[in-house]
Image (cartoon, rainbow, N blue to C red; front, side, top):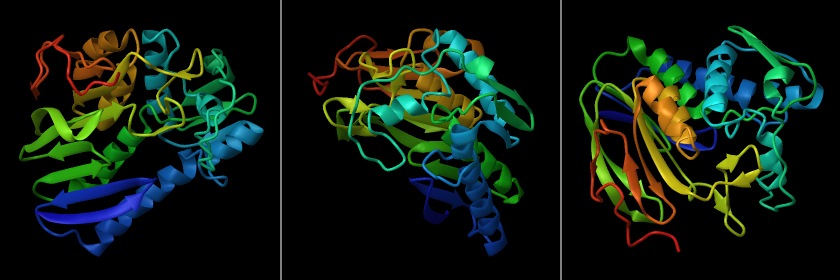
Amino acid sequence: MASWRFEAIGTHWEIETTDALPESVTAAVSAEIQRFDREWSRFRSDSDVSRLGREGGALASTDAGPMLDAYRELSAATGGAVNPLVADSLDALGYDADYSLTAGDPVRAPDTWEQRLSWTDTGVTASTPSLLDVGALGKGRLIDLVTAVLACVPGDLVVDAGGDIRVRGSGVRIGLEHPFDPTKAIGVVEVQDQALCASAINRRAWGNGLHHVLDARTGLPVRTWAATWAWAPEAMTADAVATALFFDGGDEIAAAWGVEWARMSTDGRVQRSPGCPAELFLAAGESSPAAQN
């Protein structure tokens, strides 16, 4: 397999293909990533979403409909815990555009986000200045977009963006990283013709127990679950469920969407869906000795 490695959207990417990609294809992939970043990155002052946060108004993007439709279902399933207007909550705790990592008082995300935003298949409009953060599913969406660009490439394909992966063709064996000891795995799984996305509270952590997985209703980091994994045909679906699994209702939307999953609690207990394809080294309900105290 040929491998192309690069950095984009603050993440290390690796794309593996049967044969080396021609320059025209790598240029098309780079252009698609740049477009998505220019539209949706709240860490760029010149992005469309940052302008929406300052001014309100319209953002033209064919990603708006699929992502915000999914957010509506995620919000309903989790009782409002997942919310695309969580950006100000993240900023308040220091996960801002400058990566200040200096926490202030928590800020709850507005629970009226569906009244403030309207969207179609071609864009989103904010009736008042509203800063979106699509981190609950945005990277998965971008992996799917990159995979679509590579549809013309024959043979096996692996698109890996910081450990979130979509595979076409031959299976890839992947370890499920332990959230409290990255030198260990809690299980292994073979991913074939599907996506695997994960989320963990140790991936972006700072200060006194702060991390990037927030409950929009409180503006505070979640404390019950430490890591989640989700398998689905598309990466955006897997990414969205991996986020939802940190909250009550996450397992229900996973079942509704036909997504298999596993998760580990902060005291080291493991849960899994009935059809979870992973070989886990801990039985369901068993606690890991490496769990956070």
